[in-house]
View 1 (tube, rainbow, N blue to C red):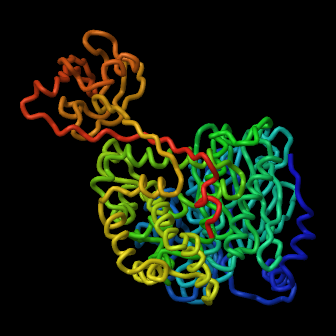
View 2 (tube, rainbow, N blue to C red; view 1 turned 180 degrees about the vertical axis):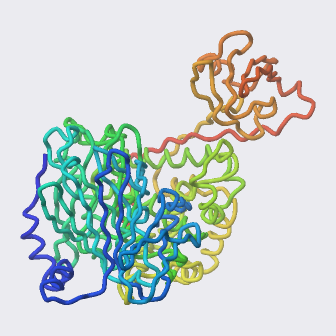
View 3 (spheres, helix red, strand yellow; view 1 turned 45 degrees about the horizontal axis):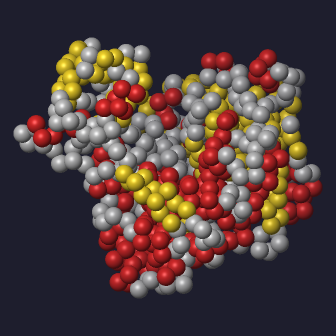
Length: 638
């Protein structure tokens, strides 16, 4: 099912003459007979059954022995993923002679050629990752980020790019599609050329950075268009594309997503993009999103999409999806426009080939994780009650993370490259998420500013206004200019106290004080951790996922991945364990445990029987938030 506004008419009215020229740059140059320099990519999907893409790159050497390179990570996901591992080999054809390219770095190759030579590169890429970070190719869907697929020509990253996606009829007419026609979704300008055995989608990018920040998908898709109006009364075209099997209520999605987007533009005044595309793939249980210059790529459980009978108040699952859309959309302003200073490196190869650690990720992901749910209620999509429930979930997650007592928020940001995307059984014991704590620090900062008659929304707007005044419409946020800007909203003493305690220090956040002060009723209770085990069902009994530090379980010697098969001679199950662990042990309990393939007997003793008992961990708190009247901080925020 699709329902669209007359897209062509809207674009003609909206983009004007200059943007028309840009969209048709390559075709006008051909029409005028001009040989404009560019880099030409051809991605052939004829081997889609094998998850392989055959890539051809054509360019003119600007120097002797040119090199090509591939990013090692994708912006917005701070982990070196080594995309080059999926490339088999590169060969170059020059003057009808073929050579195997010489690898000079883990993600770079050199070609033996002379300046001015016309070079044709060929290589294959394996693409079978359903996440939003790389590429996924099979008979159901062709999806890709060019960071995984398109090598850059060193020194030619700023040249215009023509990328052709060659899609065979064998894919377009595959039985999986059940007679429906796959279509292309991307934020890049495109033209379609249908041929007897294939269809070629031609995409234009002004440079390699734009290419690699614009994913594409070819699949059977549903969707809709809508317009958002900015402060200058300009209409901004938005597209929402949905692929994968689903029974989503598109009319409801249209209403809610358009309200969210209009709220952001009402607040910030203008957009840093000419149009915007939401690309969503519905799956069984995958979840995630990644921001791009003028689009976002999302993957969601289909059960998180609105049902045909969705109530006026969105279900918790649907709220999760709306929060994801809100989060990634806001990143167009608050990551892609206002950027961490380390992401403004002038050398694109240097930036995308190495880690770029920053102690400021809490500002970007933390602020966004606070704003995303706030906007759901501010736009009228969810109620105040639902918002307080979402906020309580953030708070409870924070209290259940023992690592908040060991790792500061600034350290968590800096360690993103080695910790956040590599969680293990000790993560919650030793670290804290800059998304989670960052969102609560943003809340505390917002309510601290409110005492001075200011709001966090004004801080964000100030940075965006700076970006609009710059030549490239971007601005770098650094520790120094953050301190400088905050001094305009708080006294230096107030800001440094806040920063020292809650960002660079381990002081517990003043959540109770600030929320109570703003009319929120807080009900607290202890989350009894019992022995300090987190388990999951296993065919043999209970598999331990995590052992809480300084708990009876850790002192007894339980380890992550142990399987408890019996407790006091009775087969282990969740019900039996919960009955025993409502309180710390009052007698010695015998547990039979498999560690790997070895059977162990572990004694869980009463703490009074232990010669040197561990310090009992503080019980995590469970909060419930309520309000008896509309809350001023949710209504008057800017």
